[in-house]
Image (cartoon, rainbow, N blue to C red; front, side):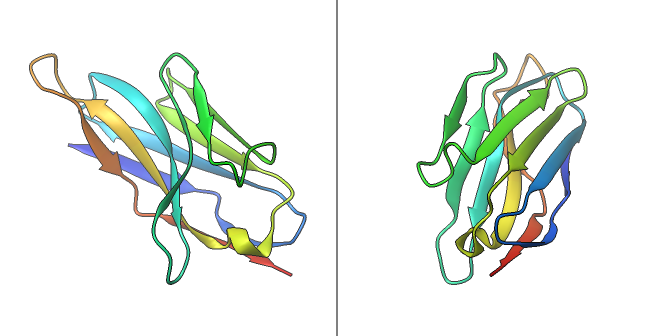
Length: 121
């Protein structure tokens, strides 16, 4: 099937930066939207940013201007550059992708296992 594997999470001080990467592999015909969600302890999962195959981006208001999403279609990867991090950004960040495995099937969303991002004050 399809696997999404994140990397790049970790511990960083407030004001610092981190870059998350997500690699898609498996049976893939096309990938439409790719992006990132996050879930902080005790809170609902929320969209951070996503990007279409054509490069159109969408950001949550809370991260616009601080985070930049990008993708490499040839490598089937999506990235999230996170700058000026705040403690309230501490969460598990999960990659998602809308993948079509064949021209005979509709696309469906797949998820990575998540990467912990901890921002200390």
